[in-house]
Length: 106
Ligand SMILES: [Zn+2]
Image 1 (cartoon, rainbow, N blue to C red):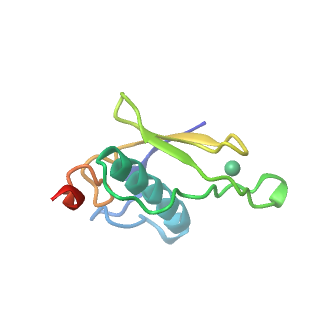
Image 2: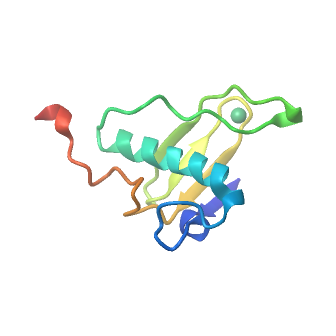
């Protein structure tokens, strides 16, 4: 189980990775943040993020379950390989879709 405070991985502006080697990880985690917060807000979401694990060096084909917990943490779980994690520190970042107006109902 991973527990990640995404802010530790971000640059000072908090809109990108702190260092280049974190680029892929930040892209993946922020995709999960956008997905989970969009769903909670009732926004139309892109397809769910794919698993990025490579058990035994083969890419996992799982589609991640991602949701916002009662504790205000974003959790994800891969139904195929069982990878799971928790993301903290996502509130108010540019990937947080909770304060985005829901245009679909207008
Ligand atoms: Zn997986």
